[in-house]
Image (cartoon, rainbow, N blue to C red):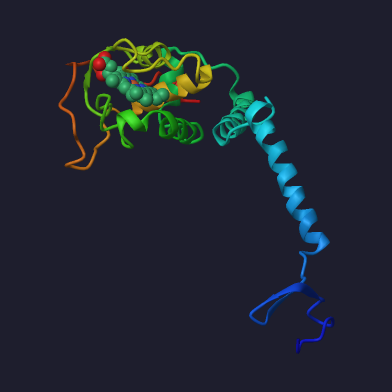
Length: 205
Ligand code: HEC
C-alpha cells in the first residue's frame, strides 16, 4: 500500500482488490440527523394531510380566504334583498360589480364564457332568455339552478349577497357587445322585454 492509512482521506478499510483499496468515509452525523428527520417528518406529514381536519387543500384555503374577504366586504352592505330595486341599483356599481366579476370569473365562465358569450350554457349578452322574463328571476335561476342541474343551483354554495351581485352583473351583461366569432351558440329561448328603468330614488342616491 502506497497511501497513508490516515490523514485528510480518513483511514483505509481492510479489504483490497487488484490493488484498489477503499477509505472509510461514513456520512457525517448532521447528514444522518437530516435524513432521519425527514423520514420522521414524512410520516407526520402523511398522517396530518390524510386524516387531520386542520389540513386544508389549496382549494379549501382559497375558499376560506374568500369567505373571510367577503365577510369583511359584506359587513359594509349588510344583507342585500334580491328585489328589483336592489338589483337595478347595483347594475354598473363601480364598487360592487368588480366583486361580482370576480365571482363570475371563478364560478360561471366555465359554462357561460369569459364574456358571457355562452359555451356549455347559453349566451347571457343577448335578449334571448330561456328561464326568465324578469330581472329578479335571474337571482332565482342562480339560486335554484335550471334544466335539472345543467345550470347548477348556487344557493348553498354562494353567499346570498353574491347571488344578488351576480344577478346585477348578469343583468348588466345583457346588451354587451362581444367580438365577432366568439359566439358559439345560437340564441336560446325567447326575446324578453327590456329591464325596467332604474328608479329615480335609487339612481339619485
Ligand atoms: C356547469 C355549467 C354551468 C355553470 C358553472 C353555470 N351555468 Fe348558468 N346555465 C348553464 C346552462 C346549461 C343553462 C341553461 C339551462 C337551460 O337549458 O334552461 C344556464 C342558464 C343560466 C341562466 C339563465 C339563462 C336563460 O337563458 O334562461 C343564468 C342567468 C345563468 N345560467 C347564470 C349563471 C351564473 C351567474 C353562474 C355562476 C354562478 C352560472 N350560470 C354557472 C350552465 C352553467
